[in-house]
Image (cartoon, rainbow, N blue to C red; front, side, top):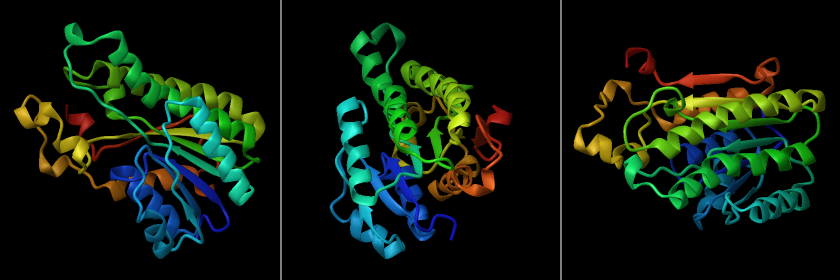
Length: 243
């Protein structure tokens, strides 16, 4: 198992891609910390049943620097180490540019961009050489649609943050990479007003499973990717190539 004796934080891990990622780490022997705004009461037991030696699911608002520091410190107090951070927590709003307010933009940016920065900073302060950060961006970073400007901008900025953090992480022995999921079978996809209205057509053949994204995240976090640094890995079944 690739993550035996390692400690992993997954943000936004109570559902969707984050949940499947946390479970995949558990099956690979990691101690898993799920930092989510609304953690599920049954999740710690479920992760242990999946194979995690231990699991901790604290409530965490990733847009709060203080909350992120508390979870990071709590992880160190509980386990004495931190090996992987997966910045998966995300927020998406659907509004026209003319209807967006400054508060709308800041709300999305605080979660989708600053949340990743806050946890990356904590990782750099606490990880030993060999640690890894994986940022979950989106194909919206490179190809997008109407009504999601803050989300697309935040995910594009997350790729830039990934490159900058990779440069600064390398001398510390830390790797930072990003993954760009495409259409994935989660509520975020099917509740998308653009999908429901038909503005965005989604072919079922182009829709991946959360497990597909989790597998790519685990690769980037593992020693198998020890020579991968500052990369942006697209995992969309080839959909973006046809848009």
